[in-house]
Length: 495
Image (cartoon, rainbow, N blue to C red; front, side, top):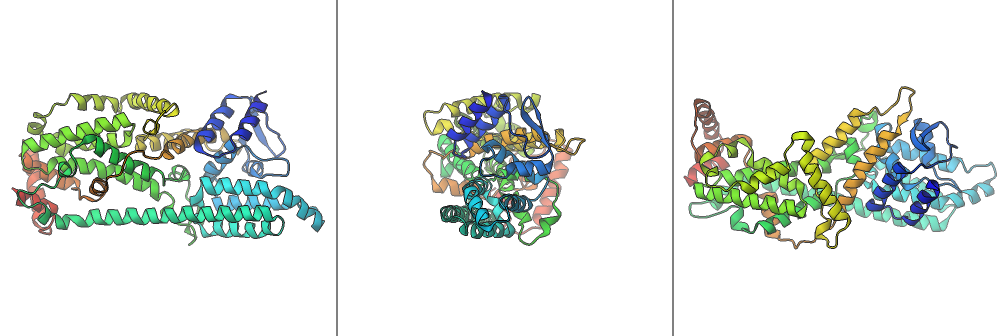
């Protein structure tokens, strides 16, 4: 009965979209599903696949005339196989096996048999290109795909057209990725160059801070959510695995862009750091204590709105910025701030007990998303660094191979389950209106480095002990020997 239920669900949920994929992965972990043991040494416990040799797992991925692997298995193995072999090697072997197993020695019969299996091969390649398109930035993967297109064209025109359409969608996706990466690089370049221009923009009497751009915390939280979802949408699921995958000797191949394997994930982590430093910079910049206190209260309200939206990543970035030493030491400024809401938010993101409070809030947001009646209720943006940490420790805490040399497939199921949940969150379309002026400010306005923040903090509220006095003296010496347009000189100019 369990096998029938799962088979029906695989048929009904023919889409490879993340919600259905996550459902299938969870379903197959709770049902006792008996699979055919036709493909070599594969071990089951309660009829669920728990381990197998790498060769058997590869063969299990290969479709035949009367067999197609269930989608949860396809996703799980395509995701985690890169722990053991290069995606290019896997694709080459799968395509080769799919073609070779149809050979009978009779050319006409071989053509008929391949025509029958071609639609299933196209389906597998479609799932691969749509779920892991970044694998195909490797020119060898594209060459293999092109070779299979030519092979399919000789046997089945319908499948050939499907391959053509699939390739067009893939190229479009990779083009969008390239444009996104160029845009992020351009924004980062602007952000790093603008400090030299700040002196003229922040002349005495002229306000140039977040409040001058927008003083509505809800709108700023909405724009932060736009940035989060935009950047999340370009993170490939394989990037989570490739952050800790063993270095592949083939990675030096000119066609495999090593620097791009986890670039979107890294860019997203860098965005978190930028937002934290932006918050700290905005607080430390103002000359007057009253204005600094107002900005602190504003960011507390922004953080609260992020929590309400389900944007936990921006929430944590704001809290991190406000807890940085240069901000935390501004005791006179903090004395002017009502910190009740901030303390509640800190409690929600308290790291004790492995972030148990946050995890409870995340489960609540996830449940709200699953039963959402509006686009806004669907938003779940996790605290990303913790998500990476969870996946990392899941990988490190369980052996990938068992003593008998088998792949530990129970571990791969768990990895797939966590990454599938991320894919559900990633696909949400932000429902809020874009405000380009606010977005531009958030992603390009210059931020201070840690040393610059400390000096700005000392200029706002003087040192309280000899250690801080020595630190300020050292920082001033460094500042004096840098470019006069350096942002730290702007603070002295304002004073």
